[in-house]
Length: 89
Image (tube, rainbow, N blue to C red; front, side, top):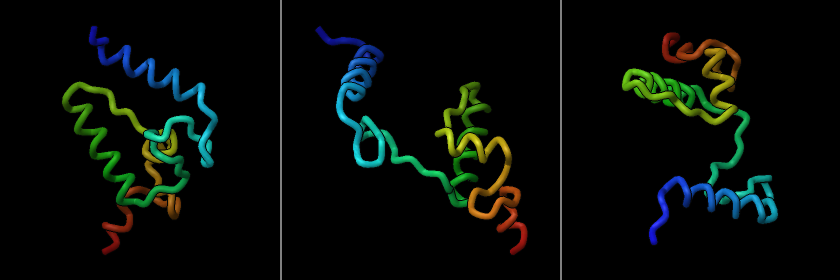
């Protein structure tokens, strides 16, 4: 019998947490590697994707490091407001 998608995801997550962590601390190799600094272009892309999802009535889901910078509206590479590199050109 074919289990539902949610059941499969929960089973995979449960199995991943039983495995020893990878070198970078992740338990699941399909999870993106942790990043603490994002380029302005990447943050703008995350921000645009989030606005698009909100317009469709869906909640955006950001990685924690992106969420922090998008909420602050700050570029993680230099600390200035997002879009500042583009407006200076």
